[in-house]
Amino acid sequence: MTDLDGASEESVDGAELINSDTLNGEVLKSEATVKDSQSRGDHHTAKLSGYAEKSNVHFEVPVTLSMADALLKPKNWGLAEIAVNCVMLCQILTLFLVRSLPTWFYIFQFFFWRIGYNVTLGLILQRQSKTQFITEWIRQIPDDTQVLLKNLIKSSYGTSYKWSKLPSEFHAWILFRMLAMMILANDGLSYFILTVKLFQHPSQTHPLLFVFCILTSAALAWFSAWSKTSAHRCVGDYAWYWGDFFFKIDTNLVFDGVFEMFPHPMYTVGYAAYYGASIFARSSTLLVLSLLAHSMQILFLVYIEEPHIQKVYGSEKTEDKSEESSKRETIPKEMLGLRHFDVFRPSDFVLVVMLCFVFVHTIVYDMGLVYYSSQLLAWRVFHFVVLSTVLHAQSTRNWWMNRLFSKGYSRADAF
Image (cartoon, rainbow, N blue to C red; front, side, top):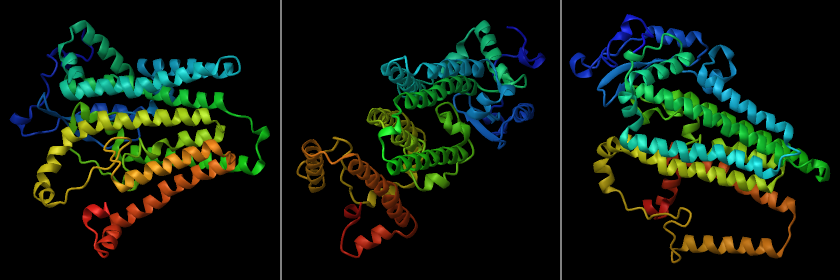
């Protein structure tokens, strides 16, 4: 194998790792990696202690760059970043062809990256969670392939990246992170280009309605950016790039800020910009595509992330609350889409009647754009403001439960 790091790299991969059984979990020091990463423009300087379960090794997690720092600052460009920027540049060139290329091309372009995100990354993460196949592949690769991977990683993280001083789990995460960066960056860019393509010129729009659309879309875009940046501040690159599918960290993540108001803010309110863009473009086609893409993201959360969260963290919560959970009332299963639907349950029956009424009313009567826009805005306000206020009052003062308990309702009724 070619010597890339000097004499320290001549040992077999993993030989210099510290075994937690023999040294009682002493953390490996890699100050050179941290300093080199900081000099390359990273702002997340907090050092994390990682634990690779299969390797049974504690190690200091090198500082990584955020996507913005990695892609927007040329001094941080390696082979992976150059590849991402080249693909993004090809997409940007299609902006100059919006009048000649058909709409289906831009829809295909967006869903190519959206499927790459929710399906490709989803299947990779699901298999990684079950079999650790990327980690096992890293352990078994021949020397010449290992040299190529070292060169790829070092081009992005600098020469201080010591392959032999980090476990295979971390190498696997870095490689997956490069693929994820390619898909996530192009997914967002392709949606922006699709918005430009579907934008409707406001020549036939009332000035007040046009101003309303601009202000609403700007507010939703700001809220989306705030929720995602706040979430990234809380979880860092480790959780942002699904690091717990590869290794664990000894530091407990603090979920404050936006996490106290919304569950999974990156996947829920973080997509408010989709609906802001639909309002700005005044395109029903873009709204439908946004709903479909957002639904795919929720499915990714339900079927990929949630099972892994339960696998990694669920057992600890179950042990801590085993006695308490045994005393809880049985909460009936609520309807999720058509799942758990029961026509004999009053709430489900009323919901179906309301939906049928709205559907028939829309077909029979044309109420105009202002009416339907007002409906959309009213329900969004109810969702984000009213429900958020109730949940905040319940979280801080147990207001909802106390109010219903005082009227003789049970905990299940209150839920």
